[in-house]
Length: 269
Image (tube, rainbow, N blue to C red; front, side, top):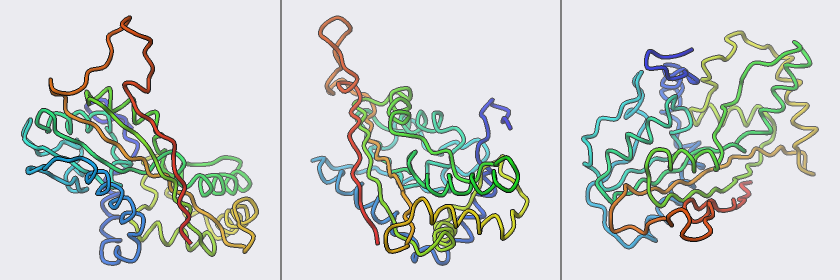
């Protein structure tokens, strides 16, 4: 599906809103990943010796309309943050451009978002179960962006001095059903626009659970779910900032313009 502005529709925004609304009343029971990501954002902000007086934290309501347009005047904010709500945006490149334009010169954008390694175990298990039963598979887990893609998107959006790194949280669950309960509690139900609307049935989940148990269980029989959280930092350009080397002035490496750090792994029992 394509919107009138030629944006490919990957995610059903109405379904996304409905999932978030269903999860809202009990969200405090399932916010452990959000709390971890917010803690990392605050730690990174603490390392920047500067006050940001005009700031805004992006919430889903800021870009849940059909065109995902932000309501901010150009160059009106000094700091924009976002915690785990960018992964279901249809026009992420366009949204990043809007964020950069909303920042004052030398303003800061800092975000955490789910990355490409997120739920790879669940994705594989659901796909294998559906292949066994139907000979084909429909999308059931988000197509998350990876660190390299996000670094490129920050540069493409015009951010200066971009930095990208990630953590991987490995969470232990009794079984696949407890994992999916947590995902619903987080508001992370399947809202892919091309998803199947047909109930796959009990046998599908039985096979998916068995595959998950066989391939991704620990010695104690509990399964592990991976959540990669990518952290983004980008600055609105300003003449006072360090400038990249000009072509030919010295050997130029990607790391001099884009810092992509190795991920850390956190175990969550």
